[in-house]
Structure formats: structure tokens, C-alpha cells
Length: 107
Length: 117
Image 1: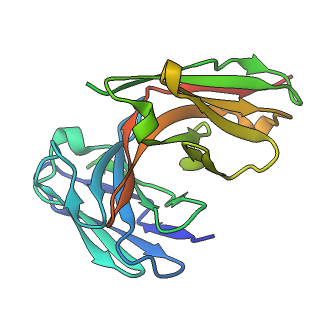
Image 2 (image 1 turned 90 degrees about the vertical axis):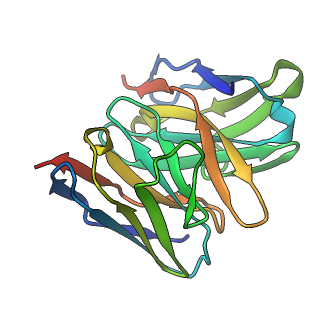
């Protein structure tokens, strides 16, 4: 199975900050990497698919990069509605696996 | 508008069985991969199973079975020999596949399964 390691597991940031979350895979997965946002009590929502493609309707302050084993989600100009938990997920090979999550909290 | 509505979650004793349902609307389920993803209390996301036509993929061989009824535009998860650690919110999701990417793009609101004596 491909193991997905996210860091950090949590972070505190202020509105307007730039935030970077990283995801490392235990083996290469090209660009089969997705990012999801989950607000408390809600279902996850896809933000980025294929490592760098912005899902329709998602604000452009979200961006993704990387390939192979190392990936990054960047949120520029953090907004109040962005305080949530973020998950990476590999879709290269079954079983599909998620990272452990990064909780973005208000400083 | 795509909508997914899960149902069937309940409190069940260890060793018991449960069938979850996911009713889809706004699209034809037959054209999509469909998935179940779960989340234990306070934990992260865990993929459970996928299905498209007669092709299935799943994590828990032997205990969980995914199926679909295109006529009812619904997908199901039959769970047996349930354990405490199966306690979770179970989400139904569409799994969008293209030549360059595969991702869960639409999600239901989830249904709660609690395994406890």
C-alpha cells in the first residue's frame, strides 16, 4: 500500500497568511494526488486534483504542485472560511489512501 | 445538480450486519465509478470500496460488499461481521476518472454506523 504522510498535522495561522501543507508518498505516484478540505461536521470537498488542477468553483487562492512523491498545497491570503482540515489522497493504485490530515486553526 | 443521499446507518451489535444505501440524483450512476469512504470518530478518511458496472475494488475483503442498481440509481454497501472499529460515518462519493486524474468529486452527507454492545 502507498503510505501518505502529511505535515504538519496542525498549524495556526492568521487571516491573510500564506499557508503551505506538504504530502509525501512512500512510492512514486506521478501526479495522481488530490487535496480535500473538510470543515467540521461536513463532508470533504475536493480542492485540487491531479496534483495541480483546481476544481471548478474553488477559489484561486488554493494551488497545488508536485509530482512523484512530494506534493504541496498552498493557500495564499487565508480566509476565515479556510479554517478546516485538509487531506491529501493518492489515486495511483488501489487501495486508495489518504494522508492523516492537517488541521488549520485560527491564531 | 448532483446529489447523493446515504441511508441505513444504525447502532448494531458486534458481529452484526448492516446494508447502507446511497441514492443518486442529477446524473446517471451507470456512467460513474462510485465509492464508499468512511471516517471514524475524530480520525481521518479511509477509502472502503469502489464499483463501476461489474468491476469492484475494496479494502475489506470478505466483510464488505459493494453493489449497485442502475435502475434505482443507487449504490449499496453490505457490511457483515461488524467490529467496534467499523464505527464511523460512511460517505458515498462519485469517483471521477480521466486519462490524467482520478478523484472523489461529489460527496453525500454521510450516514452514521455505530458498532457497540
